[in-house]
Length: 144
Length: 119
Ligand SMILES: Nc1ncnc2c1ncn2[C@@H]1O[C@H](COP(=O)(O)OP(=O)(O)O)[C@@H](O)[C@H]1O
Ligand SMILES: [Mg+2]
Image (tube, rainbow over all chains, first blue to last red):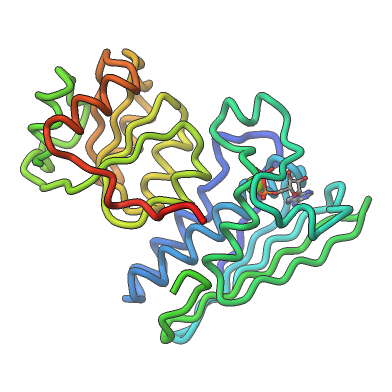
């Protein structure tokens, strides 16, 4: 099953809807709750990033009995220094984003901790593509 | 501690979630940063927050948090309460500040055991 969502870049109040729907779809498939939470958290952080940093884009989630593969693609400014961006606490988010409860620089580290596989392809001036894989069978995640 | 005891301890108002009043809550997490909630919350907890926007409900839902308390007398707008209701969550509003609300719940026996220690 493949789900696809357009994620608008100008409305933070909608950010997270795609992740919530994917979470429910995984619930209906009877996937293990721990894996669902890991998938939901990493997709949600990526979705928020796509809205606040990437100007919106397209999210897809491919669900199979073994795993979910989430791809979030934007055509925003890209990430100049990925190692720096991956550090806990690093954020270029403006103040108003912090007032919304985001921009703590925990998003990418959260994604890494929760995903079994995290791939980030980014080119400055062209955009960012984040691929998240969460497997259902294994205990999985950097946390486990 | 039952959800109904949380309401009483905080002199709070239950905005939705009558069905959850007898649910037992083991731990609490106070945060205004949603990424912190996602980084640190592990078990089912009550979330105390001063952040009144749809993201607080959505983050809680994603983390399987079923009870959200808004501190400092902030009352979430109707559409947020409706979203929480659709998600099967309980929403409580209290006039206490974050510090006092957390302190009162701690005094009443709630602990922070549902959160991961920072590395
Ligand atoms: N999709 C994206 N497009 C452009 N920059 C991004 C994107 N995602 C992340 N970044 C950059 O990486 C930084 C760290 O991301 P993250 O860990 O999620 O923290 P936060 O979102 O709180 O700033 C961001 O502040 C931003 O500079
Ligand atoms: Mg982020």
